[in-house]
Figure 1 (cartoon, rainbow, N blue to C red):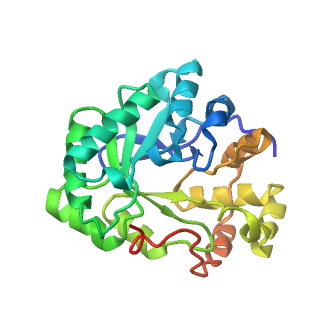
Figure 2: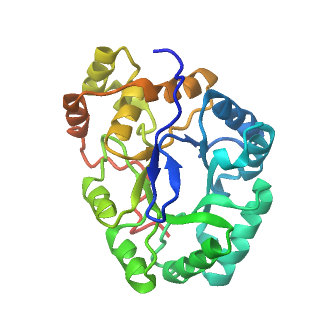
Amino acid sequence: MTQSTMTSPTLTLPDGNSIPQLGYGVWQVDAGIAEDVVGQALEAGYRHIDTAMIYGNEEGVGRAVANSGIPRDEIFVTTKLWNDDQGHDAALRAVDASLERLGLDHVDLYLIHWPTPARGKYLETWQAFREIRDSGRARSIGVSNFPREELQEIIDETGVVPAVNQIELHPYFDQAALREFNASRGIVTEAWSPLGQGGDLLRDPVIEAVARKHGATPGQAVIAWHLAIGNVVFPKTVTPARIRENFAALDLRLDPEDVEAIGGLDNGGRIGSDPKDFN
C-alpha cells in the first residue's frame, strides 16, 4: 500500500464536536524529538495529536502545531490531567500549565488520565472539568482508564457525560463490555496501545493472514480493525516510514469476516495497569 491521500474520518462526540478517528499518539516519545516527529505526522496527514502532562512532551507538540502552517482549527489536540493534580483547584491550575507548555489558548479535548480511586478525587475533578469546558480552555472533556462504575458515578452526580473514555484496547484485549457501555451513554471509545505494543500481536497468524489478503502490513490491518469497530485510535511510532504507513491504513477496508476474525482474538491480555488498582 502507498501513502494515503485521504483525510481521517471523524466521529461526533456527545457534545456535538467532531474528532478525527485516526490520530498520532506521543506516549513514550522523548521530549527532544517530539517537535520533529509530530511535525512529520502532521505533514503525513494526521490532524489529531494525543499527548499528556506526564509524557513530558507538551512543549514539543505545541511547537510542531505552531510551526506546521496548518490552521489551528484544523488540528485536534488532546492532553491529560495527571493523577497528582486531581482535585478542584489543582485541576484548574494544571490545565493552565498544560496550555502554557503547549502554547495554546485551548485544547480540543482534556482528559482525567486515571480515576485513581484510592484518592477519591475523580468526582471533584470532573466538576472542575465542567468549569474548564465552560471557560473555553477545553472544547470537550473526557476521561481515560475509567471502568463502568466510576463512569456512571460521574454522570449521575454531575449530569455531564464524558466525550470519550480512552482505554487500553487491542485485539488481545478488546474491552467489548466497556465499549458497549460507553456506546450506550454516547461516549466515544479511544484505544491506547492499539497495536498491543507490537510483538506477538503483529505476528499473530490471523492478523498476518488478513494483512496478506489485502496487501497490507499487520499494523495496518489492526488499525483498520479499530476504525471498522468505531474506535478512535492513535498508534505511536517515531519511525518516519511507519508514521506514513500507519496513516495509509485509512485506505484499507476490511471485509466483515476480517473484522470478525480479528475480533475473535481476545484473550484478556491486558498489557498496562488495571485502573481499579492504579493509584
